[in-house]
Amino acid sequence: MNRNMVIPELSTLSQENYYVFLDNAFKLFSQYPQYLCANEGVGVLELAHLFPRVPETLLAIYIGINDAVCNKGLVTPFLPRHAHNNVFVFAPEIFAGQKDVPSGTVDAKVVINGFAPPNETWDKNWTYVMIADPKRTNESLWKEKGYIDMIPAKFEDFTMISDHNKSKVCTFIDPEAFNHPVNKGRNYLKTARARGEKMASEYTIPELLKGETNGLTPVILHQGEKLYVARPDFQPCDHCWSNIHPDNIGYAVVHENSAVPLNLVIAKPQVDDKYKKSLIPPAGSADNTTDWFFRGKELFRTPIKAGHIGG
Image 1 (tube, rainbow, N blue to C red):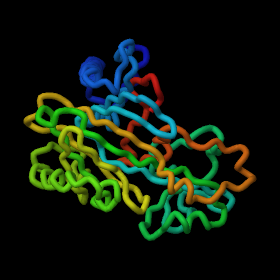
Image 2: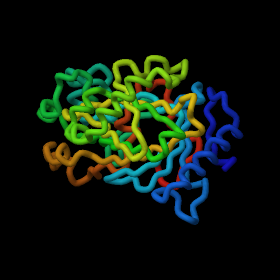
Image 3: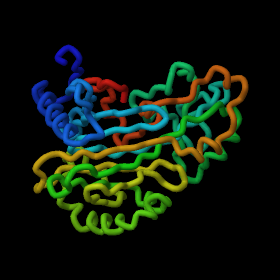
Image 4: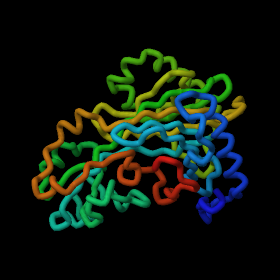
C-alpha cells in the first residue's frame, strides 16, 4: 500500500496515522456480515481525507456495490457538511458557464472542487449547473433553451450499525428532511430528534469547521435506526455528523444505501435525439458531479488509497 498512498501536502498526519485509522476501520467493518467477505483484506477499503488540515475528516469506506444503487459502510470521526445536488446540462452556445447560466442557478464547475462529468460521453465543455435559488424548479429548467439532460443526485438512507452505547453519532440535517414521507413514517425519529436537541452540545465540532452545523437539526440514532437524507422537493439536503463524544470507546459504523429517486427520473423529459444515441446514463455515486460541500474549495477529492470498487 505504500506505493498507492496519495497523502496531501496540507495534511498534518503521518503515513502511520493513516495505517492505524484504516486498520481500526477494517476491524470495525469485520464485525458485521454485510461488509467484508472471508477473503477480503484491508486493501479493499477506500481511505479519504476530505479536509487535510482537519485530522477528524479521515474517512474509511467499504463499498459493496456502486451502480444504480450504492451500498456503503462509513467510518469517520467527522463527516463535513455537504449535499447532493441535481445537475442540469446546457449547450455552451446558449449558456457559456461561469456567470452566464440560467437565472437562479450556479455553475457546478465553479462551486465543486474537482468537478467531473459522470462519464466520458458527457462533454466537459458543456455547461453544468445546479439550482441556487429555492424558487427555481426542476420543471422550469427542463424548459430552458439549450437544455440537454440532467444528472439526478442520489438520495441516501443512513442506518446506525454500531452499538450506540459504545459509540454515539450525532447527525445534523436540513429540517426539511423530516417532511419527507419516508422519515414521517419513522415514529422513532421524534425521540431521536429530542435526543439530539438535548445532547448535541456534547459533540465536538473541529475548530477549523465551526459553523458546519448552523441551521441544521441534530438527530441521534440508536442502533438499527435510520435517517433518510432527502427533501420532499428534490432540493439539496445538507447534512453532516460528529462521531466525537467523550463517552465513545471507538468509532461507529454507519451504513448508507443510496439511489436516484425513480419518480424524478421518470418525470424528467426525454433526451433529444441529437444526444440520445451517444449519452450513457450516469452510474455509481457520481460524487464528482453532484456533491456540493459547504467548504468545497478546501476539499481533497483524491482518495488517500483507492478501494476495490470506485467511490
